Image 1 (tube, rainbow, N blue to C red):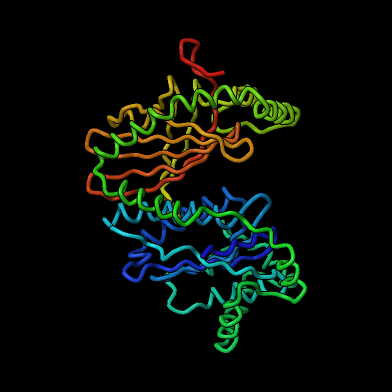
Image 2 (tube, rainbow, N blue to C red; image 1 turned 45 degrees about the vertical axis):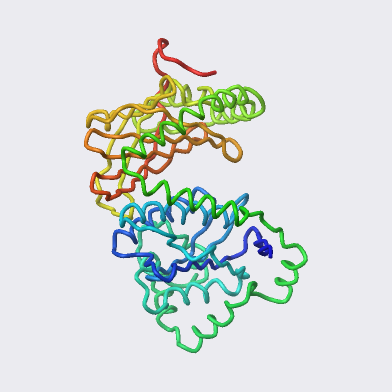
Length: 406
């Protein structure tokens, strides 16, 4: 029996619920929580979503989201949970599925339910972590608080919201819990609008999803040496496809990028880290390929650690291989990288590098023609995995003797 298509409605709220398999625990310690929150922060920005609240427990989690233009909850949750599952299974040597089937989502009318929904999540019993503390801090946060704070215009919004959450009573929370058992929550007009124009979003077929999850589990069982061999074979097999893509970008995609460059050059821009305005604008005129380019990176451990040290690095893409100065100094070899196109003018690259002591580092970066962002994971010889975020700024092209794509 085919499963129902999900409803997509830009500007609507979604309460997403994910449950653990009966034999698994989603978060074994604080490091698991920090890792999931780091991924949550990264992917909600990447997928153009607002995150109003979250609650994490040992066997399930809730997210309160708003979908932006061109975004879908399905793509966001697939990337978030798939990546976390890989990190979790590698760190804890876990065999099997972590999450129980696909996630459940409830479409909720934003007004008047936003405040009631966040209070429900922030007063949630037995939570290991939730986003309530983000609302009490004065500094900027990656939680989107502005919409809620705008509902308290005559007083300090953080204090007003704290009193609002503390005033929650059990009867109201139980009522919200019952309401959320429905697939759509809102006024009769809101429900009728979604039923008449649901804008269904396609999802991967169950058979394909099962095959993919099975492959991921096989992949995660391999040793670092086996991972390096599998990664090398996959990367080499993509070289022909990368060359075809290099020829394709000389068409409409490149025209769009040139229009973007002209618009950027017409504006007054601030210099990026370590470069001048002129150097920055020169970097914008580079062809739509990483080949033959150099980047200054700032790398920071994930998990919301405010005091964590930022690691500087330099990446060079040369001869279809990527070199990290930071890792090279530790004995890591250069590695081949894959290159693909995403939606619009967004491009991604991936690679895997191995160190002399059996460490495995996996990179996944995204480039919009100007700034590079991504995730790096470092698997230690004992199996522990440390996740990082990174941001990169272009530092021009390599010298003329280097290979380049146009």
